[in-house]
Length: 269
Image (cartoon, rainbow, N blue to C red; front, side, top):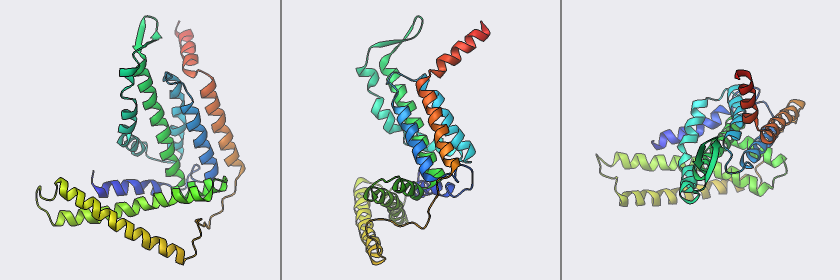
């Protein structure tokens, strides 16, 4: 993947957030609260629970469908950063050698089950976070957090980190293009060249960050990023949070796969 592809892939999340759908029109606070409830509900399951997590897939599927967000794009983003989750759980089968019965006469290593649980929880939570950005925009999320009384210093740091990512990518593209124009074939691809590129990129981004910060101070920045938008919490936003909370509570407290299995078994018995 080239720097240009990665840059425009990150920017696409922001572009998707400017659509006009029922999900996009919801108040950022409602979507932030719903996503937090979703994440807390998913991670609260024991490490050996896998099938009980699948009903939670309904939330990202509905958000993607109603918000007109390409499911394939979100799936590719989840897969792209999946090595982190794989690295976290890859040693579970080695250290957790006990067995768990999943069916009469069928036992599986508990380490593999906990590994699968980590992967499913990762896929659900990351997809929910990406959908939150794609339907709200990162500045919108920061506005919602600020109006939820999250400390302004924390919100400002989040917003600057996100904005600085684009600055870093722009400088990286300039450096890589300059390297490509001055090299031919495999020249300019060694370890020494890579170290020089990283050093140059660091110096350029620090200098540009200082210029941006100076410009912000000259325009009256005092530690909090102001916003001209003031969303109003409507009845639809409250109903959205209540509906999501009820769905998550149902999926968390009721073993839906077991209930569905019993109903299906009764119908086909």
